Image (cartoon, rainbow, N blue to C red):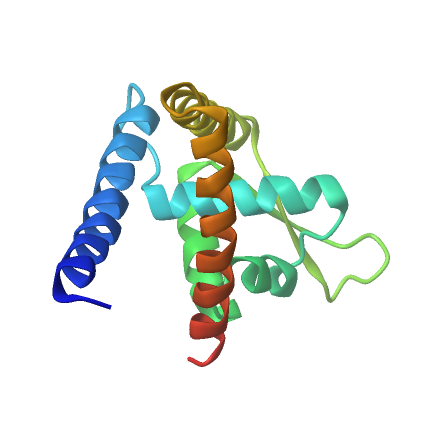
Length: 152
């Protein structure tokens, strides 16, 4: 890799990551301060896994690639803010399940709308051929980052 390619890639990753976070924060801003982007991603995971019946603390933590302890802290804050609730599993009272509240579902719907809009805009900006090349390259990058993250 040349130095110019290295600089371009680094600028792309850093700049794009920061721009997406900024846009996501704006899209999620509601009448109150609302949850942070990180908290919104917890709500998103809980909502998706609850729909599949896989909404235990350990299952949500695994989906987010965080420890159960870190999730416990986040869930506690989101319960206090009214975005999530905790409940015992009806078949095993030792198992704690997490559910989005109505407010949590509204936050998740705004978050899903942001992603839909972002993807639609990208799709409109690229030709079919460019979009195909981009998706193939992103699959390679996704595999790289999954392996890189798994190494710790």
